[in-house]
Length: 260
Image (cartoon, rainbow, N blue to C red):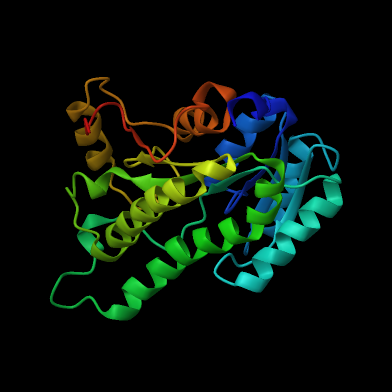
């Protein structure tokens, strides 16, 4: 497995929910290293098209729409990506987020939250990651190489704001990360997670009051709120040859707010 790990410049990378916010930052970070990008989007077609242009056009990136909770749509997405680049996806970043607003004052409380809220988060997080994994598994096994990076949250370790549905789904994704790592390691496939706190700023965190950002910054050793660009750097590590002996891990990237 270690000897076959390609450089980032040789990889074809699928980032789900990759047109805006953190997903766009991850795509830009991979592009800066020469990777070719599959920019998945659901409703953000114009943003995805603009990002393709920014990253160098069709030779460097392709925007492909698909609802990642739809298994057939994901398999079709992966097939279209293979056709476009003439080679299979070898790295997947499961970044897509079910609709959610990080506003602690407006969160659902334990006595009112209902199961559909949990179901939406589990479908958008766990089912989506399972769909992408299954869609790329055949090619990764054939190549004896694959990288799957799941995006998590430090709220699993430190639920300072009890977003019950969102955090439960991310905790389940962490469990799936580890079971997949144990099962797929012999095939040369590494599965890891990068977990962040509140990022300054994405669409999801736009509803967060400025005072909350300031309080988080004051509570970190680095005295700063992590940016999407900083978070993306850690994602690149798990896709790179530098992480060739690492799998089943959860790296918390939040300025040291949570030390796990």
